[in-house]
Image (cartoon, rainbow, N blue to C red; front, side, top):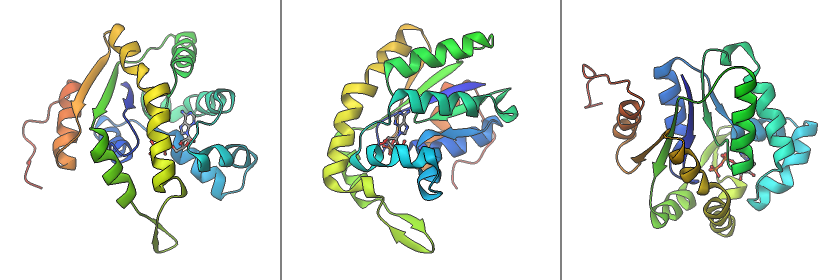
Length: 201
Ligand code: ADP
């Protein structure tokens, strides 16, 4: 199955991407994670992306699209994938559609995680991640940058919701609730129900 996970910063995309991908048996491909790995590895790609990321801006499409194309060409993505953080602009979505088309492939479903903006700001300013055994704030989770990233999302990424809706591929799901509840809603939208599974853990 070929799936895109859409949603604003702070909606829980990263967490849900891992869980959904695992249940589908496909790789979770996060452009944010690939960029961060390249920044900490001080690769050429990382050096190009860093300034944009620190400012909360999008990395230019030519860098991002080439990177995703390479990743999707790897053997583990042949039978399916879950994209997290890509596409983020209409142009990226169009380029994704044409490169999949060249392979005779198309997306099966786009899941949009819906969370209101007050909740996003609360979540992002409290978010910490583990680096070298220490809990640190991501540089782009500082309050000013968070507001900027939400603005970038509203202007450049939110229109993808209409783009995929008009293709009949969009499922919008409520991303407020426990991690398990949100995953279950996503699996239901993907038509993969697990009725026998316990919901209490
Ligand atoms: P979040 O969704 O929480 O903002 P991500 O981890 O998805 O964070 O992305 C972090 C940063 O990486 C973005 O602010 C942007 O600079 C860069 N980035 C990730 N994906 C893309 C993309 N598809 N196009 C352009 N830039 C991207």
